[in-house]
Image 1 (cartoon, helix red, strand yellow):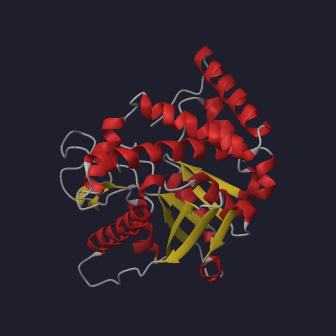
Image 2 (cartoon, helix red, strand yellow):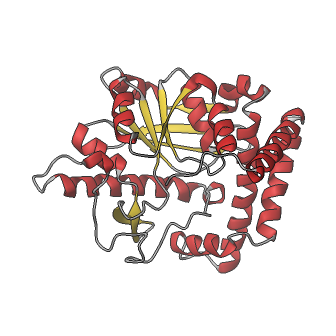
Amino acid sequence: MRYPTRVSLQHRLEYGALVVTAFLLRIMPRRLALFAGAGIGWLGWTLRIRREVVLSNLAQALPDASHDERVRIGARAARNFGRTVTEFLRFGGRDRRRTLELVRVQGQEELRTALAQRGAIVVTGHLGAWALYVAALGMSGIPTALLVGRQRNPKVDAMINSLPGDHISFVSHGRRAPRELLQNLAAGKAMVLVADQHGGPRGTVAPFFGKETSTLSLPGALVARQELPLFMMAGHRAKDGRHDLSLRRLDVPPDDGRGEEARRLRITSLCNEAIATAVLEHPDQYFWYHRRYRTPGDGREPARPTTKSAAGR
């Protein structure tokens, strides 16, 4: 989707508010800033912002949990989201120097070994402080690229993309994305794809928490066509206030003779299963606010399984 590049008065006001918020959060002690962020998240939950979406998603993921338990998980997840935004905004300040102290990365040696041969696909979801984890991956010395969406506000978009500094290469959704993805992979980078949102009309329909829904096609398409190694990246907030981030190589299903499209679907299902497993370990640290499930045929989700995407053309 294209957004206008013209900067309006509303854009300037939004940007100004974000700059002021980021400044205040950066000058606070870390613990106080996280407390404030959690409070903002709690306020959003109290105001019932997308609460129905959250509880609907939780009912799909945790069918055996009671309604009250889902409400408690949703409330904790809202506070976690506030902390996550706080940490990302603080990354542009003094927390940048402490990133590898705040995020303990496990499993990076296997990824380094894979990258010595060629690029690799790293799938992840909106779990823990996901944006901080991508930054930590790049700062650990692993050449990293990230596929990102473009914000409607161009000034906010530029600010967000500037926070990680030179540690990450960004690839924006659009016509040039497939070429840039392949260029980054050819350069031996870990291509991070956040693959837990609704995949739109060109997505691959695959099960997520037991329900078929459109899923980002790129991981399956790139791995199947380019024979790339595939990794899962997941992290969570630990009790000591730091984060534990793990990288795990996934066993890609071999070509069984049923064709590339069938293999793409199997790879997509593998990614969904890996993300769901990580989410269930820490459901109160997941971003449940996405409209992950939509009605087939409503113009936003394909009516049948398909893996046609820009990468598969």
